[in-house]
Image 1 (cartoon, one colour):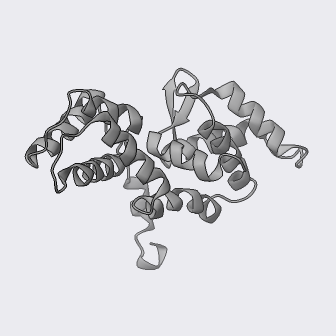
Image 2: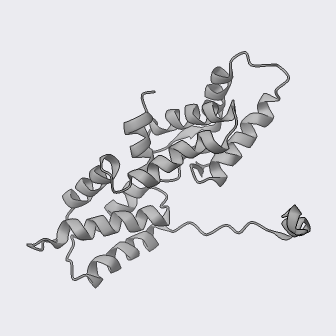
Amino acid sequence: MESLGRIDLLSTLCPMQLPILRPEEVCDFVSRMLRDRGIGFEPSVPSIVEQALGRPIPMFLQMATKELCRSVQGPPATTATPAHVTEVFKSLTTGIAAQQHLQHYYSRIHKYYPEPQASLAHCILRQLCNSSAQGLTRRSLKTTFQRELGSVSHTIDRDLLFSLLMQDLQHDFYIGEVDTNRYDFESGLMKAWWKKFYGGR
């Protein structure tokens, strides 16, 4: 930008936050996708997809619905059931369909987060992927952060570093505040994948 003489334009940018899809919108999307393809489905299927996704990232919502349609269309064509949803999410978690997208989220931390933030981010995400559906409190995550940071130079403002790291993880769509001062992965699919491949490290 500076070489083009337009560095001043950076200050005119403003962030725009896309609204999070509501559960009923996710269910409606899944229902429409199935109906438009002439696929029957048990009434509980859309809500089971919504629950499995957690707070849905649109790309993962489309990916999961597309795989669900593919798994049901046959031949012979069948009716989508909760068992189909379970199989689809298992396939997405362990197979190659979503691998490149999910692996990108893991690898980009080392690329864009300087140390010690990268190691601290992975530590926080490892703890979150092993948590319940309610996630973990900010206090609990900060305890993990402090333990991982250990005896690193006292010149580091630990409170500020933790706050900035939490902000970065939220802005980059890894985690979200699911309740007051309680956090979890933004995507249920990503959480399941992270737990399978990196939860024990």
